[in-house]
Every structure is written in structure tokens, then in C-alpha cells.
Image 1 (cartoon, rainbow, N blue to C red):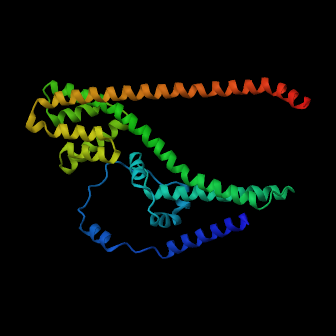
Image 2 (cartoon, rainbow, N blue to C red):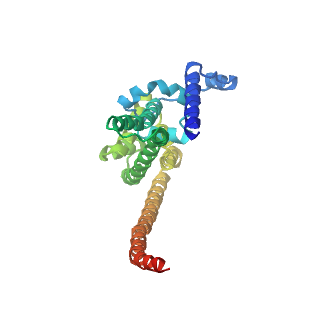
Image 3 (tube, helix red, strand yellow):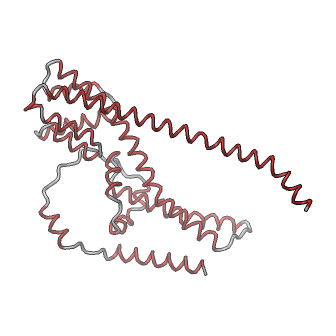
Length: 297
């Protein structure tokens, strides 16, 4: 009965996905009008990577997954951090889920050729479990990569704030201080800031506007606050140097606090193997005695 229910559920989901792909739902009138009257957004600063074989294989499943409202807004921001297109991510999710669904069936066929038959329930249940895990695996990996890149960007931003502050104290202007300071640094974070400043120069916009846009795309509030502070330089003059120095100090303090919290969490996790080893030792010592007591009853 469980096998029949699982097969029926899988058939229903497959037919529903096929119908959504063939006949996609029409958007609401309010959404269409809002899309038509929405101002044109500036081109994204973050670059996107090329598609791989997994994205090409799962491309037919992108439209049904988009119709389901995937991915979420938070995951969209995470994908924008390391430049992965949404269609590529959805295609990879579908490909990994499909591989997880078909892998137990392939293993069952190989075992059947060797004379071993596990039944129909094992590959069906294992395929559904692996498909669910494979569907969630790209999301977890994307969040982990985005969190690492944001952490590294905050470390580089604190150093960049110090360089801008020193350059401003030397008598340079705001634009030259931003450009000269970013030319010193190396790495992914400085490359993104350099790209934002180049975009501002080519599009003839203010550098703090592109820095604010970059902060919104990366979901790094510290960069948006930096852009707001730099935008006051034209009216506040030298006061922007003190603001940048204070923000750099606050950012370093926040990073030190996060590092201490991570170290304490790692220390607490190290006690778990010790507790498990102690429990195993107790079982190793107590099991013979308990066996002797039970056998003597």
C-alpha cells in the first residue's frame, strides 16, 4: 500500500509539473502593470558565470520551478553574491534531484543482474529521499558560499576604509581617494569595488551610488553605510574622515566579536566527541556486567 501511494504521488506530481510546463499560469493584472510602469533598473555590477552540463541538462525544468516561486528572495541575493544565474541554479537543482531519483533504480538493476533483488520499496523510497536531498543540496551550498564571500568582503572592506581615510587625510579628494585605495588591494572583494567604481566612471554616475548598489546586491549593509557617508563629503567636508575611521573601527570590533563567538562554538562542539567516547566507554564496561546479571536471572 505504501508503494502504491508513493507511486501515485510521484505520478501526480509529474503530471502536474508537466501541465505547468506546457500551460504556464498567466500573471496577475497588477503584476503586469507594475512591471510595465517600473523604472528601468541599472545593470547589475556583479558578473555571472557560464553554464555547465548540469544547467544544460536541467534547462527544461526551469520554467516549472519558476512557476512555483523558486528561488526565494533570500536565495536570490545569495546567488547574486557569487554571480550564479537563477536559471542555472534551478537547472542544477532539477538535475541533481533527477540523478538522486534514478540512482537507486540503477543500483537495483545492477544488483538484479547479479541475482540480488531488494524489492520495489527500497529503490522507490531511497530515490525519493535522495531526490529531496539533491533538490536542497544546491541551496545549502549557495548559502554557505555566499556567507563565506560576505565575511571575506567585510574583512576587505575594513582595510579599504582605513586606506580611504589615510588618503583623505593626505589631502586627496573623495573620488581620487576611493580610486587610489582600491587599486592597492587584491582579491575578490577589491575586484568588486573596483568594478563598481569603473561602472560609475563609465556611466557618469557618482561613485557612492554604485557602491550603494553593490552593497544592496551583496546584501552587505556596511558598504551601503559607507556610500551614505561618502555622499556627505560634498557638504560636510573633512568630517567624512572621522566617520570613515569610526566605521572602520566598528567593523573591526564586530569582526572580532564574530570570531570569538565562532571560536567558542567550535570549543563547545569539540566536547561532543569526548562525551560520545565517554558514553561508549561506559557501554563497553557495563555491557558485560549487565549481560551476566540478565543471564543469572
